[in-house]
Length: 476
Image 1: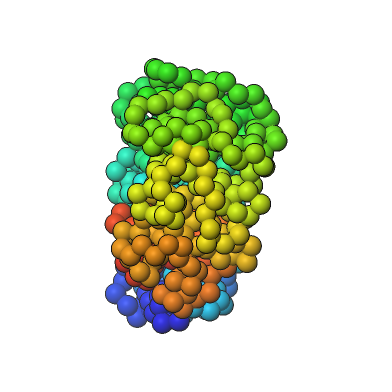
Image 2: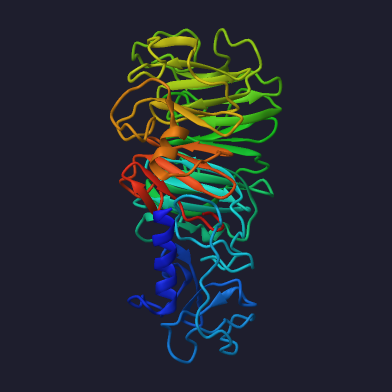
């Protein structure tokens, strides 16, 4: 409660002129951020969300006298009368617990790209890379964290405050995936847009090492995309096209770069990428995996011996003969849900297999609660149960498995209980996503992240060093 009160008060004081005036002249929308609220640049001046205004926007009281405290004209070209000349603070969520100070706008304002700002926290996907995070909501993509390779889809410095990817604002994004330093989005017409650091053609399928803003990839009719460390794969209904580095066979070829077609025919239900290996779910819900197998991460019985073992042809993990409900891939770890039960295989370094030891075949993990969703980082994994609770296990050097007990390896940690103890909020998750060493959940009105946050990948409303909320539009 204290964090919410302070954040909301800071926003109210700033907008009403009782705090030091921020920079209210602007050239573009991203400059108009105040106490977690994203404003809009209108005729060179910042305005902020206020549902009491017909336009949904009001100039702050500390703006120049001619417009101070007035509503922005619905046409976006100036102010209306000075009715209500003392600024009404934006409405905030009525939910309990700590908050970000971001607003919950009921009228349709504009994002930094000029598109509509979602009025509710409708998170469809969370995707994490090495040191950045992206969310898909209402057809748009918002990212935060590191931007040294343009992972946020824009020029400039990175940071914990989410910004919308402007190049995708007028497109309806239906699927999102992030890898180490690049990400891709599938749009409604079947096109794929990718951005970030290209080391070996993994962003757009050709070209030299370069950092790229969102670019349309020459692959059509795509339904889902999976982004790994230096490769990308796209499911196109009946086949899979991959591009980028293929040293481990992760693009379906023994050597070379560019576009390759995996030797598998659809229909394909889903596709996911680990660091250097991938898996897809076939029409009969079988799991088929390919790529790096030096630590048994394909589940085909290969010994975890560290020997170079690329596998280009997708095949099923041994033992898992039943339909797979969900699956997740890490660096040298793979996991699957079968009937709510969790199976994992690959290298055990920090309790990823709960003490069973490294294994080239799937091992059932006792102690993991029955689940409906599974996610994995580099060397840790998490599940979401039906009531919306989160449990994690594996490496915890940044609190990614247990944000309340950083550094300790405690087996399966009740992350929901830990987050409740740290934040004072009960968070019932509807979505789960992981990056290399951090994880995030979404509820109907909040987004929270935990784990490593040194590049801002946890969000812009810190609670502890290992836990933060994210001020996405309509959330919190």
